[in-house]
Length: 119
Image (cartoon, rainbow, N blue to C red; front, top):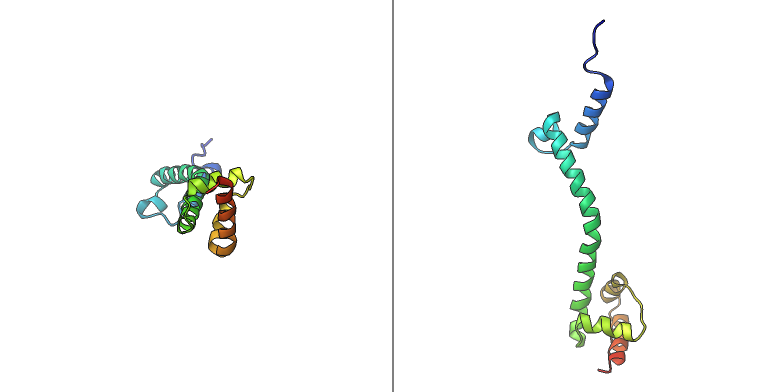
């Protein structure tokens, strides 16, 4: 009896890998051997970067808050310390959006923080 070498399970697995490699440059999108490595690397980067994205956004929010509060005469670290002393709990994302969308409200928050610091 003849032996099946190229069964559907194997073919389906290869098709799945090549489908994931769609759009890759050069042989990486058509050659299974190279596509397999490229897809493994891409999936590991995607996993890692989903976690890194949270820190990236936090850094962005902090930079925006710092840029918005400096013209008002306070640094980011002093602002956060003042908010903590004033028992104002607002997260950095909301504070950043406030600085962008409603400058007057942000200014009021900064003044509350400054009052709590005794500045």
